[in-house]
Image (cartoon, rainbow, N blue to C red; front, side):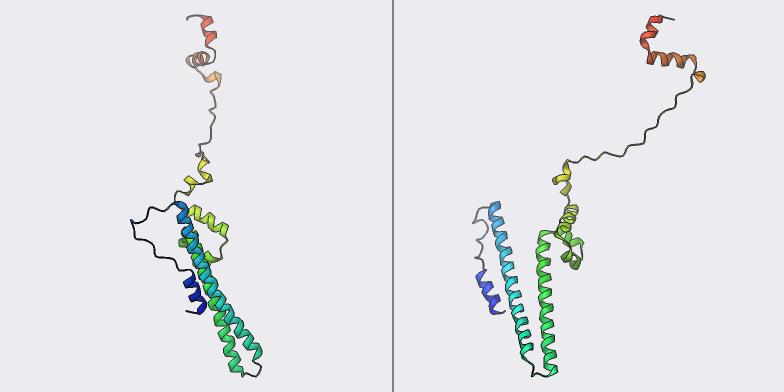
Length: 188
């Protein structure tokens, strides 16, 4: 562990949590404050590691510029070490981004490849997470939307021509369409 990492570790150390039962249940605000504290500790530790790696890279670059009298093999070794440190920094940045996003979007993290997950836009991740989370539609803005089931297409019945109807069918039509007229005619 480097000096910077040790300084961050001692600076961000949290006191021991009291035994269960000795403390009342935490309120929402207390839990959120504890979560923010933990995330900020991770941020500080990551920033300290990144800073030390960047300092090493800068020192190697300065050394490479100042070392005009070195042999080609020594310069190649410095370049290789510089590339190794750059890759290590990039890997740590990706690992940190992956850890932060996994905490925020656990469903999407399980569904996607880590490289795609880190490279994907936050808005797309949020949308994917809402689709993958069970019960999300019952809670979100789409919960009020009603879905109309598909209905069968309407078909219009083609009426029989009057010339083909029987007298009983004609009287039934008349009774249905003009019951007052039938009453005026009287009983048959």
